[in-house]
Image 1 (cartoon, rainbow, N blue to C red):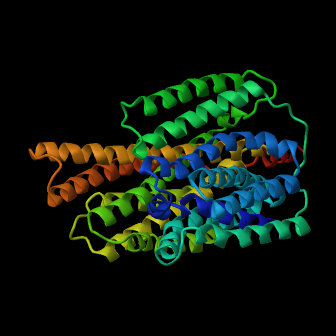
Image 2: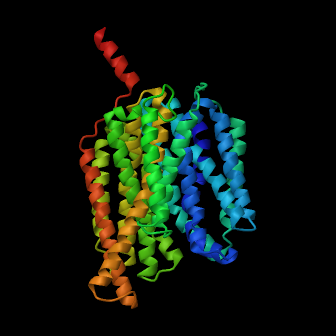
Image 3: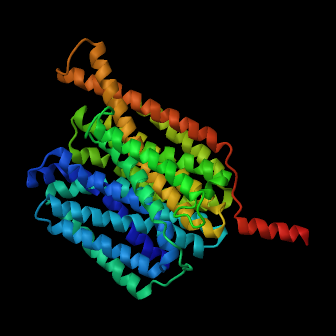
Amino acid sequence: MLVMIMILGVFVAILNETLLNVALTKIMADFGIEPSTAQWLTTGYLLVIGVLIPVTAYLIQRFTTRSLFLGAMSLFTLGTFIAAISPGIEFLLLGRLLQASGTGLLFPLLTNVVFSVVPFEKRGSAMGTIGIVITFAPAIGPTLSGIIVEHFSWRVLFYGVLPIALLVIGFAYAKLKNVTETTNPKVDLISLLLSTLGFGGIVYGFSSSGEGHGGWSSNDVLLPIAIGVVSLVLFTWRQLTISEPLLNLRTFKYSIFRMSTVIMMIVMMSMFSAMMLLPIFLQNALGYSPLKAGLIMLPGGIVMGIMSPITGRLFDKFGAKWLALIGLGLIANTLWQFAFIDLTTPYITIMIFNTLLMLGISMVMMPIMTNALNELPPPLYPHGTAIISTLQQVAGAVGTALLVSIMTNSSARYLESQGMKEDGVTMQILAMIAGMKSAFLLAFGLVAIAWIVSLFIKRAVPQAHALKAEQGTAN
């Protein structure tokens, strides 16, 4: 009951990451704003999550499970209400930022609770159930949004979520108990500042490039990334030299955790970039409506929802290595197929490809994450979950920006090679196909690297279990 209450809360929160994308056009018309302003509704959301998640390791140790979950859900619910009634873009943006504040706390808290209360032998199944949340929710967001926005006001997206969020708060208040031990760690303000500048700068810079705020030569892109990189270098040095780090980077001394983090970042880059590139191609090249473009994601989302618990049980029985090898092979093959789609590719074929992509992701994501955290000693669980969650968000922002940029630049080069400027609908579509090919081939190359890394993955044995085994052998 404890985990299910938290899963429902995290589901509605993560759903909001992609729920608003299809509705931006109507929001721009209602408030009379430009695309660059409207994009802050998504960029700001990612930015807050990227900044907040590194702090969750401290918050999980400082506050009880009950108070932190209720606080996070209350922030999310307040933001949802403000967004629903917002008279202008300022209030809508405020609502989105409050939603993101709650979302950034919820997923690391849920993962930490699972690793605290679920026996080692059953963690795969439990994390597989959580996989429904982090994969199915964002996958169905565009489809659900397209259906609602086509028939109702965009405000229904928030009004519909509001009663569910209130219900979760009510259940949590009545049933939720404290399961994690609290301490009184000191918060290092310098680390907090460096973390905010580091992760915030990188997410903002790459998101700005990917969403059209500026090219790679723009100061709006380069300056935040430069500040972010320098801040992260200083942040890393400080975490390794102080007695109570904000984020304990010593998790990376565990080899399985290191390799698993690389694999998960690449998978997140592939998933978020495909969710961005495919709708662009379907609408701009093939002329499909936003609803039809969103519907192409639905079967894949359903498959992920069905497969996540199954892959969790398979992980408990066989471990992560073979699931990762098969899943990454499926992802790589699908990205290769995406690289060669054109105007003659049937809609149903693209839908099947996307479904196979999501199947592959469901086989990799939660088993690899569970295996990574299994290797850590219990005191490092909050830090491990915070690190993985942060790097997943950063990878999503970086991957989307990188692949959209490659698509744009490759399209421009194609037009130049044909000796034509940006005119002619047919040439524009052919240029887009060429750009899509370059972007998906790069994604294929990254996944191929992840597949090679997965060859070295072993089944993790928790430090506590390893110690007991050594003591038993000695006796």
